[in-house]
Length: 79
Image 1: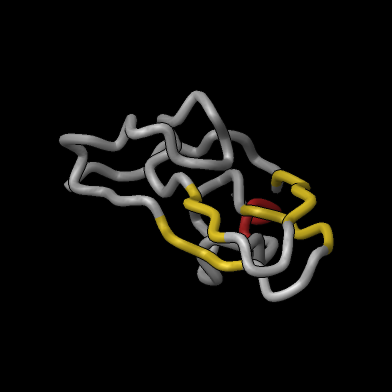
Image 2: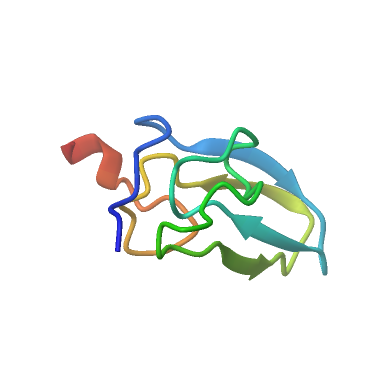
């Protein structure tokens, strides 16, 4: 298994829509951050599916080290 690559050391602010499913890039290789574009193939890592419960702005993890995958928990502040 390959370790994830931090895409950036800050979260991605994203306006999400209630009921819509999002696939967060867990490997850090996607060109469509913070979402998966299939670049993880062969890494042993897989995207994380997440469904929005409300229409609002959320913060997806950019450093790939959050304990609240896929949402930011502030871990990037300690990197």
